[in-house]
Image (tube, rainbow, N blue to C red; front, side, top):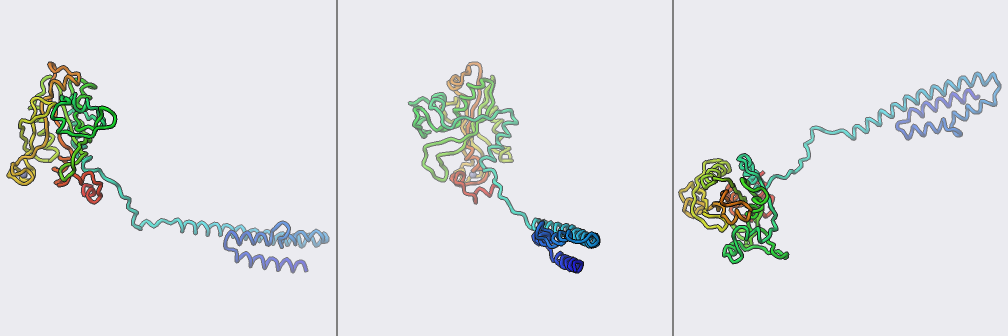
Length: 343
Ligand SMILES: [Zn+2]
């Protein structure tokens, strides 16, 4: 009777085990047959204690064999389930290397930054240092120290934004850094100063209230305008990647003496005359001159021992010339469609 019961139990256990396919059904199976109190096999093994020694030996051996057999099969099953679940997991994690990648948009340099870096590289190779200064500047550095006293009409040419703090303006040019550089480093000195400047200006295609300049100066015992011409020729040839024509003509700036303007042979018409150069073949490019003795003095440099030139040009204007941009507002408008052309 009992033997029959055990045989049937084995049969049903084996068929149940066949149906086990995941961790949950495996646990259910385990509970059904091996639970400490309610397991079907457990119960039978417990019931053996009431038998005679003879029967115990016989049936006990038999049922233990069955138990071991089932346990052996369960071990196999468990491995199978583990393998299957791993396979499922890997399938989910599979990466299809043939799928196209997700493109990430990367920003690029603004044309002003690109050209500024180009110019910085050229000057660095010539031994100039690159300096910066405050955009909110004292009236003293922006005007007085540059030989533009408060009564001077040149102040009207550079109308600017006066700050609430007494005697403070948004700098109208990068030139105040000339004074700061002379005070900090003394002579001899070779430096350029790229930076943002501000003017109280009505905005149109060629005027903006905020733009960029590059200032430069070179001070030593025998620096003269021939040095300036040679340096600017080299720099401009390299920026425009061709031999450009230059000419000097007299010009007035309070912080230089003599002062001059440097014109660039028109790059559009090559000097033949067009609307950009107003048929003259020349385009105004920068102001320059020999640093005024008063400016050297303000920079704590002795004008009897040292001399040098200074120049300043519009980086914004240069970028417009280089890329043929006809509206200055495009450069500060933040329009990506415009800027993407320079990637
Ligand atoms: Zn022209």
